[in-house]
Every structure is written in structure tokens, then in C-alpha cells.
Image: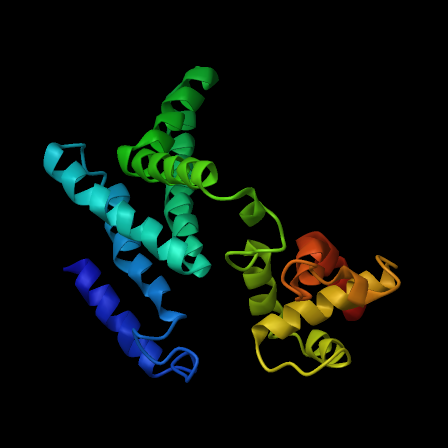
Length: 238
């Protein structure tokens, strides 16, 4: 019931926000599949919060949820945020248990070991285990070209973090617009990467850094990296 109420409220909030736009109109939009991660994330989160014991029934219900979550991540990389939610819950429980054990257990080593068991609750172990297993399987069957920046199957993870933070910084927006028009979030990240590359003399001719395989300049945005973009923003803010 909690999951149903939360999901219903989420859809209601979305339809009344700026997220509900032409680029993501409804379930048929190519940006929308990430919502498939909502229910599995809530399911696993509640299993952790309510500290449900491992039973055959709980396991049979949790495994399909993890599989749906993995499918959502494969379809839309932004669904990876759901993993952070689950890991954050595990971290909070670990911290709370560590504080409690630290006060109750005179032997500090035992207190740490007792608290560490909190991070090994079965929903988290199941999620991490299946995600790693699926990742190993995909690396084994896919062509090595998909491990390069010529054929990116999704945005780099830092790219999503950056454009969401920089979108609220007027100085960054103004600087990014000097490179080219910003019609969406992607251009914001790539423009700032180009600025950093130019300031640090990464290459003399940007065209030469175009991917020879795909003919796109996406490699330029990938190579800059999150730390370099952070330093670029720091220079702007200063």
C-alpha cells in the first residue's frame, strides 16, 4: 500500500511539473522507461527499512523486482539513481547501528563487526549480487567496442550529475552559452567540457578529436571528466 501511494503521488507530481514535456510525454517516450525503477526501488527499500527476514516468499517476490530494476537501468541509465537510494538506506542503517553498538559494546572491534552485519542484509546483497552478475555477463557477451567512448550506450554517470547541478548556476549557463546554443541539458555538459579542454590546451584542433567511428564529438565531453568540470565551474564562480 505504501508503494502504491508513493508511486501514485509521484506520477501526480510529475504531471504537474516541468518534467512533463514533449521530450518525455508518457510511457511511449524513449526517456520514460526509467520510471520502471520506482516500484523495485520502493520494494527493496521497504524490505530494508522494515528489516524483513529472508523467506522463500520474500525472495521469490524480490528477485523479479531486481530484474525489472536491471531492465530499467539497461533501458535508461538515469535509473542508476535507484541503486544510490538503496545504498543510502543501507549506509544510514549501518551508521545508526554502529552508534548503538559503540555505546553498548565495550569492545570496539566487536562493535564494528556487529554493526557491519547491517550492511549485509539480504535485500542489499541480492541487489548488488545480481547487478554485478549481470554486469559481468554483459561484459562477456558484448563487443569490446562498447567499452570505448566511441560507442557509448548511455550518458556517463557524471554527466547527469553535472547538468542537474549546473542548470541552477547562472554563471555556468552564461559561460556555456558562449560556446554554442543550449537547447537541452546535454549541450550544457558538452559545452563546459569543451571550455575546460580549450583552457587546458587538451588539443589544438577540436575537430581532430571527433570520433573516427561515429563522426560525433561526444568523446570531447566524455574525456573532460567530473573533476575537470568541477575545476572549470570553480574558475567561473571565482
